[in-house]
Image 1 (cartoon, rainbow, N blue to C red):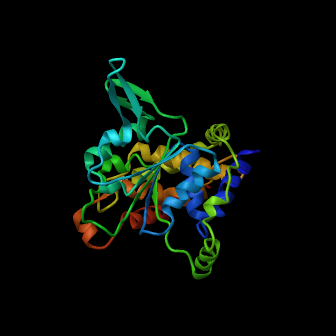
Image 2: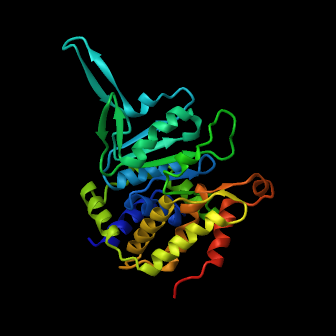
Image 3: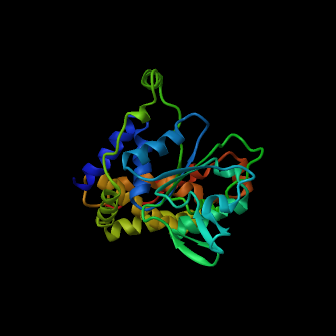
Length: 310
């Protein structure tokens, strides 16, 4: 299969389970095949966990879920060495981070110490335990979720942690007809039980290589950098987006181009993905926050003012 056929086959398989979320599936796969991680911020019951499971089942990948709670320890995620009385040696028992797809459910309920345990894993695809560096799987992908309407018993993710996510987006509610379709689909059993893998892990490795070969012109790179640099001088922003945001915007735009069957990135791809890639990385000053403006509003305004390459 071509790169477009592979990624659209995965999207179509997920769409059998997640109804009315074509754009969310598109963004999720753009992050996945470009090597990024995703933070889903939405109210309970919109399908965040189901989306992660559907992705794992579609590519025949290992999948682990960690329910983040205040008493969760870093070793509960990374693993721990246990002393064996029989051979008088310590043996490492890997944690759930040693997988292909990791769902970090309600990540903002865990303590900052536990949240930071994912930093090295997400940024470098490795963890340091007992003085040893242990590499993670080459397809390691984190889907984290958080509930934006609850604040009691939560620990907001610090900027350094947020910056590790290639993008943040919401699923939102589906319309009435799609919700009726969801009820019908789950009348007897869950649609997750009916889907099977359409690709394997080797196909995803090949797909990632194809994404990196999608051409992006110097004009498109300059367009990306201009957008990112504009966040650093925009009114009301304390900290703008970092070069990591530039890289994430470029790579996810390449993935979208492949999704569309194109060999090159267009301004439309950059504009489509700019808000979910950039907005969560911005720190607004108190006056801007109190005025009701959001980081999303600022990024959308920047997109309107920056000249689009011809």
